[in-house]
Image 1: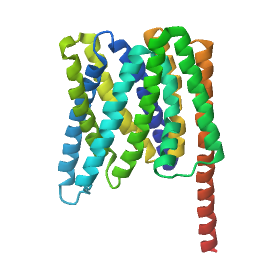
Image 2 (image 1 turned 45 degrees about the horizontal axis):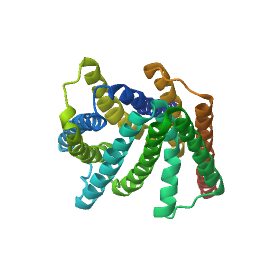
Image 3 (image 1 turned 180 degrees about the vertical axis):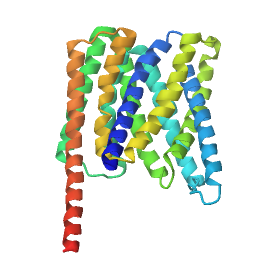
Length: 321
C-alpha cells in the first residue's frame, strides 16, 4: 500500500508540474500588456533564485548538524557547466519564448512546446551519439509535421508577425534541448534543489542584463501584474521544477516524460480560458499530430525499459533457483 501511495503522489506531482508549466504561456501573454518580455523574465527568475537560495542555505544548515546527511557541493567545473546550462535554458530559452509569445499566441506556444522532447532526443543523437530506434525517428518526423501545421496556420491567420513568433518558439526548443543535455552532464551527485538553484541564478543574471534594453519602459506594475509575476516565479519556476524532480525520482523517466505531454493540452485550455483565444481546426490538427509523434517516439523507450526490467527479474529468479 505504501508503494501504491508513493506512486500516486509521484504522478500527481508531475501532473501538477505540467499544469504549472502549461499555464505560463497564457499568464505571460496576459502580462505582456503591462511588462516587457525581458523584464518579465528578469523579475520572474530573480525572485525564483532568491527563494531557491534561501532553501539551499537552510538545507545546508540542516545538513551541518551532527548525524545529518550532507549533499556534496558542486565543484568549480560543475558550477561552470550548471551556469552555462542555466544561461542557455533560462535566459536564451525564455527570451525566445517570451518574445515568441508576444508575436504569436499562447495556444501556438503550448502546441509547439510538445516538440521539445523530440528536439532533445535529436541533440542527444548528435552530441552524445545516442541510438535512435526507427519508431523514435518516425515520432520525430510526425511531430515535425505537426509543428509545421501549427506554424503554417499562424502565418495564414496572424500574418508574418505570428509566423516569426512561432519560429522563435521552435528555436527556443533547440535552446531547451541544449540545456537538458548539458545540465544532465553537470548534475551528477547533486540534489535537484542545488542544480535548480545554480541554473536559476545564472539565468536570472542573464535576464537582468538583457532587461536593461527595456529600462526606458520600466514602470511599477499594478496589483494584477505583480500577482502574475509572483505566480510565474513561485509556481512555474520554483514549484514546477521541484514537483517534476520529486516525481522523476519515484518513477521511470519515460513515464514522467509521457505525463508532460499534458502540457500542450493544459496550455491550449489555459489560452482559451485566460486569454479568450480561439482554436482553429488546422491548429487543433497540428497539435494532435505533435502529441501523436511524441507518444510514438516514446514507445521504443517504454519497451526497452520493460525489457530491462524483465531481464533483471529473470536473472534474479535464476539466481534464487
